[in-house]
Length: 307
Image (cartoon, rainbow, N blue to C red; front, side, top):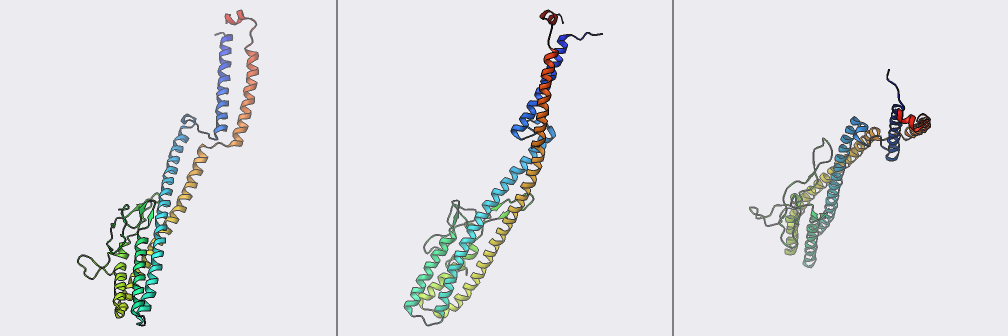
């Protein structure tokens, strides 16, 4: 039968002490970090799941940024279209007043000047920017869609700017093609009379006022009301996109909460339970130290060496 020596006893005792100390250190680390998984070896499956959940959170954060960016685009567009609407309504009031035939030539000339000023204001609103980008120029965001002065030609393009707003959701177009409202003014290739869109109508109104052609203002008013219908539809479309972005934002927040809850249940420690466990392990380790001190006592150095 193999003899149990004091060396074997001491080695076994020290090994047990080291195991208890390692467990105590691991529990202490959990308390300090608040995490039950500090290394993949702590829980390989849980570590793998935590990586997946953190990846989902990162993706949702990107979607949140896209929604915020899209909301800023549409908010700026909505504000600019509201300003344009107010200015068009001012033109409508001037046309109705001038079409009555009671205005003097001087009054009509003054009205024409005001209309031209409103046109300049509308073109300025069409050149609104967000984060240094022209929001109504399509994908050519570094170019102002309309120039100041008499040149009413649209300088942008019809490209769509889209943002991904959530997992499984189709990208949303956040820009508006304002050329469908303002057009290219009176001089259009292949269309000698213009394109019939807002800038074309407004230039006709100013020209008819300056010429004193009040009879033509009735047709101008009809064209203007058609343009206002286009403007109203454009505003409604922007509002619909804003609603879609708001719903996407709420959905992403709910998903983030769900994933964060899963992540917390995977890697967070139960502090009360872990503190109790730490106290128990600490008491056990102290008791083991005292017991080991008695076990490892030797009668003499020679007795220890003989083992």
